Structure formats: C-alpha cells, structure tokens
Amino acid sequence: MSMTDPISEETHPVRLRVNGISYDIDIPPRRLLSDALRHDIGLTGTHVGCEHGVCGACTILVDGKPTRACLMFAIGAQDVEITTVEGLTRQDGTLAPVQQAFKDCHGLQCGFCTPGFLTTIAAGISDNPDPDQEQAREMIAGNLCRCTGYQNIVASVLRAAELQREEDAS
Amino acid sequence: MKPAPFRYERPETLDRALAALAAEPGAKVLAGGQSLIPLMSMRLSSVPLLIDINGLSDLAHITVDETGVRFGAIVRHSDLLEHGGAREVQPLIAAALAHVAHPTIRNRGTTVGSIVHADASGEMPMILCLTGGSLTVASTQGRREIAATDLFIGPLETSLEAEEIAVEAFMPALAAGSGIAYDEIARRHGDYALCGVGAVVTLDEQGRVTHARTGYVSVSETPVIVDVTECFDEGQVDERSLTAAGELALGQLDPETDIHGTSDYRAQLARSLTARVLRTAHEDARARGAQKVSA
Ligand SMILES: Cc1cc2nc3c(=O)[nH]c(=O)nc-3n(C[C@H](O)[C@H](O)[C@H](O)COP(=O)(O)OP(=O)(O)OC[C@H]3O[C@@H](n4cnc5c(N)ncnc54)[C@H](O)[C@@H]3O)c2cc1C
Ligand code: FES
Ligand code: FES
Image (tube, rainbow over the protein chains, first blue to last red):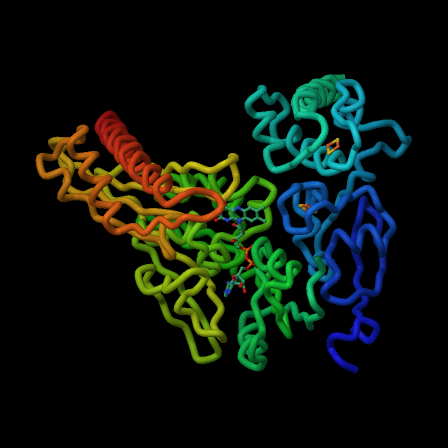
C-alpha cells in the first residue's frame, strides 16, 4: 500500500461539534475542515473559493471566533465548538439579524461569498454592537465579494447591528 | 488544492512532541496552520508526519513584567494584540500586529509561528529584531535561546534545527525615554506589506535624540535593522536628519522587483516611510515623557 494511493489512505475516527450537534466521521488527517463540513457532514452552507485563506468564503466560527475552515484540518478541530452559517438561523427557522439584514439591504447577488460574510459579521457585531461605517468596512476587510461592490454589504453590517440591538433591548 | 497524505499526531506534552519530531526526519510542526496549510494545499510542501502543537497548553502563556513580554508557541496573534499589559510594556508588538493579515487569520495564526516561518514580508520577525528579542527553542537534547540577530538567515529560513520546536519568544520592554511607530504600505489593508517600517527613538532629559533605530519588512530577504542615530547628531528631528536617515537606511536595503512593485518604487516607499515613522516615534517618545512627568 503506497502512501500516494488515496484508496488505501489510513482514516481516523473524528468527532466534530457543529452547531451544537456531535458528528462522528471517519477521515484521513489531510481532510480540510471545510471539506469535512461539506462532504462528510453534508453542511454545504460553508463555501470554498480559494482554499488558501484569501477569499473568506469558508469562514466559520470556532469557539465564536471567525476562522478559515480551509486553513484547519478537521482532525485538529475536535476540542472546539464550530458554528457554520446553518447554525446562525434560529431553532424556529426564523432568520438571525445578520441574515435578515442581508435580505433587507440586498447584501448579496450570486450568494457565493455570503456564508463567510454572515459568520464574520455575526461575530463582529457581537464584539462591537454599534459599529460606524469605518468599523463596518474593517469588519469585512478579509472577505472578498465579486458581485455586490460591497456598498450593500456595509449597509447590511449596520442594519444587522441595529436589528441585534433592537432584539437585545426588547 | 488538497494536501498530499500525511500522518498526524497531537501530543499532550512537549516531551512527547519533541520525541516524535526527533524520531521522524522531515516531520513538521503545525501551529496555527495559516502559512503551512496553504503551502501543503498548493503542494509546495509535503510532510510525512505533522505534529500538531495546539494541545500543548503549557505554551499558551503571555507573561509580562518590567523586563518585557514573553509569549508561548500557541499564543494567537489576536490574543497578543489584545493583551493590555503587553501593549503597555512593549507597544511595538500591538502596533505591528494590527497589520498582520486580517482579524480572521489572526484568530488562528500564532506569533511564534510567524517568527519561525521567517517570511521577510512578515511583520513579527522584524519586530523581534527591532526590540532586540530572542526565541527559546527546545529539542530532546535540551533548550537554547537564539538572539533575533542570529535567527534569520535567509528567506523562510532560520537557524532552528529540524528537531527543534520554538517554545517561547521574548521581546524586551521599551526603554525609558523612548517612543515607537510602525507603518506600512500594502495594496489592501491586511495584505502583506509592499514595504513596512518600524522605529524606536530615544530622547534624553532635554528632549534630544540619543538613539534611533529603524526596521524593515518586505525590502530584503531577511529583516533589516538600521541604526540611524548618527543622522540626529544635533539631537533634532527635522527635514535634514530625516532625509539623511532615509538615505542611510537605503544603503543597507536591497529592494527587489516583483509582480507587486518595482525596486525603485519599494525604495521610494522605504525612504518616505522611514521619515514618517521616525517622526511619529519621536512624537510618541515626547508624549510618553510628558505622561511620565504629569503622573
Ligand atoms: C490570507 C493571509 C494573509 C496573511 N497576511 C499576513 C501578513 O500580512 N503578515 C504576516 O506576518 N503574516 C500573514 N499571514 C501569515 C500568518 O501571520 C501566519 O499566522 C503565520 O505566518 C504563521 O503562523 P502559524 O501559527 O499559522 O504557523 P504555521 O502555518 O502552523 O507554521 C508555519 C511554519 O512554521 C513552523 N512552525 C510553526 N510554529 C513552530 C514552532 N513553535 N516551532 C517550530 N516550528 C514551527 C511550521 O512547521 C511551518 O513550517 C497571512 C496568512 C494568510 C492566510
Ligand atoms: S476558501 Fe477558505 S478562504 Fe477562500
Ligand atoms: S454575491 Fe457573488 S461573490 Fe458576493
């Protein structure tokens, strides 16, 4: 069995905690977390663009902090709580403030980049509940979008923060 | 864009990690993975065994005292950047870390990892040099401390032995009477710098410059530190001394042309950033001095 033969590759039992649920999967060490989420667990909300950390499409939350899923191995992610874009939606199926804001402000066109923006902004407005324009731009500076021109995404950040503040106040 | 197969270990103790590394030629350490995983995915790096050090909780410390700041190998850029004590004792750390990648990358990447990675476009190798810091490394044979000046020997190359793990970095405190600045030009905020420059300026009681040093990112194969004190022979920060400092520094730099910019452009950036950070560091030193007096 040669090392380069993918079929004979040794796999390991791995338990991932994703959106509050434990998943047991059997994977080789080289499985990127982004691929484990999409292919092994079936949560295809996490998108994969560049696979080297530049585009931000694969951004998930690791213990609440935005992290590139393409820059972690799934086997090394067993002691953390992972939140994907699917995990932002409420239990009752209603949209989280950041999702609602993207809908309100037309923050997406093709939607490819959107999961990475949503997770990043969800964490961003929890750190800074009242960002100004400049802070909203800084919050999303690590994510690329090829469609919108960003203006509506910046508006969505501000709107998401507003919705979140209203919700926290009530 | 998928890494080649490798074996994986995640030891719970440093001794086990060191033994695993010593036992397997070609094995590599995985810290934050923000440089190594892209290299593996692009098949620019392939390893038989990856030793994940993220389970070594003994290496998660940030210790600050009047001598300086020590931080362990799994301290993330973001944790060090947010550490109030570290910022107070050696403000260059936070000033430069704010320019390292995007917050999302900083949440995972380690500062020790970026030092060991020794990318001449990385901010923190230069900051280790500019602060006069050092790196503590361990192997099954014991520990040793490597001064920053002996660490960086080429692009992506350090004086670490293959079986050594960097356990801790130390950056000395900012000296009394001193001020700092760091600035860079990048195509987008968070991208690697086309040119980055840090400065430390020290003043005497009368406010005259007694010492000035600058450090350079992305304009040579390894971090370059230039002592520009002689340009301030009259103790003043003015056009004449700042221009002289820029010229002195350029004599020791080797800006190269690449797809991001020509060597002339990089030289011009180094020249103007040198003047800018020296001016800001001088103001910073005065402000810190004034704070001391009023306190
Ligand atoms: C999109 C993007 C933008 C970036 N922009 C910047 C930037 O502007 N400036 C910048 O400085 N960096 C930037 N980085 C890199 C980032 O700072 C990385 O965190 C850093 O270079 C490496 O740290 P790491 O912990 O991720 O190391 P890893 O990727 O895990 O390791 C890097 C190398 O160092 C070795 N290594 C790591 N830790 C140790 C140790 N303790 N002992 C021995 N060997 C070790 C590894 O074996 C590997 O060879 C960027 C990265 C990305 C993906
Ligand atoms: S796919 Fe992970 S950053 Fe582009
Ligand atoms: S909406 Fe198409 S890439 Fe952002």
